[in-house]
Structures are given as C-alpha cells and as structure tokens.
View 1 (cartoon, helix red, strand yellow):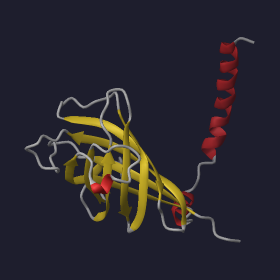
View 2 (cartoon, helix red, strand yellow):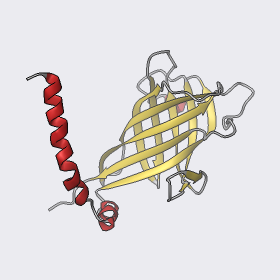
View 3 (cartoon, rainbow, N blue to C red):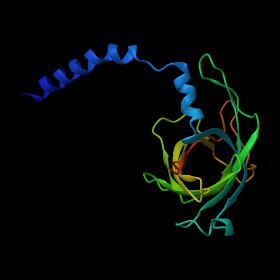
Amino acid sequence: MKRSTTLLILALTLWTFVPAASAKRPQQSTYKDEVRAGAEEIYVARTTRTQHQSGETPACAAAPFPSANEDYYELWSFEVRTKDARIVDTHKSLVGGFTACLGRLVQGQPVPMYATGTVAHIPWIGVGECIVVKSQPPVKTVIAFHCLLDLSGLPDAYSGGFGVSSTLSPFIRRDQPASAHVPGYLSTSVLTIRLWRKPAAK
C-alpha cells in the first residue's frame, strides 16, 4: 500500500472519531477539578529586569558554564481579559524573583542559563538554555527568544518541575539602566512554571 493511501485512511479514521470526542467535552467542573486536585501547581508571571552585571560574578559561580552576564528579575502577576485571553495589566502583584546567569551569545547556538529564585515563596534552581527564535519583531532594539529550565532544589513536597519563557529582551547599552525597555513591548518575559507534587502516601 502506498504511503499516501495509508495517510488518507488514517486521516479518515481520525475524522470519524471527532464528533464522538467533541460530544464528550469535559464539563466546566472538570476543568476546575484539574486545579483543585493539587497534583501540580502552575504559575504564570511576567518578568521585570531590575539588575544587570556583565562578566562572571560570585552569584553565578555555581553555574555549570562560564557566565557572561548576571541579571535579577522580579516576577509579577498579571491580568488577562477573559473574553479573548489578551493580557491587559502586566504589573499586579510581586510574586517572586530570580537571579539569572547567562553564557555568551554565539550565533546559531543555544545560550546556557542557570537561575535561582522563588515563586509564591517556593525556592527553585533552574538549569537549561535559551534559543533565539526565527520570528523577530520589526524593531531592531529588542531580540525575541525562549528559555527552558529544568527545576530542582524544590521543597520536599515536590517531585520536580520546569519553567518556560516567551521572552523579548531589549539590548542594554552601557548608558542604560537594567530596566530599559522599548515602548509598546513587554520586557522581558512571560514565564510559566509547572511544579509537580509528590503523590500522597497510601
């Protein structure tokens, strides 16, 4: 059987199950139970850079790579418009913060990242990397990338977790403060942290 015929049969088979799956859409209470169950905790915040220091620093000595920059970011909660999920207020309450150590930016390679911080008073350590995305904004004073961190150093109640960011960072010149931003753009990240709790002992 040709590959195209196999793919067509597979597509038709999946299509026949779509109405049945749609008819069994979970009730609103099911979505609420996902959060109430407490198996995982999800935190979404925006970051605001308040400190920036070039070169290797004592705070970055534990990073598993030579650090090129040390930054400190505050974590702030934000408000989302419920009718379309658009963010309408990015600075509601301070919910945590972290120190980030970044390696050197080499074209075509991920930038290593090491971070230590808290969210909702929960301590964590993150190790991972940041990748520049192909789609860049129309202005040349910011750069878009995303970061992925595997989390450790969590309280004993947690088995692990990860953090992922959607980031738009302004280029900081020597005569600019760490909080420099480009009007109309969110600096610097929308960060999602997912933490998994250990199953209750039976």
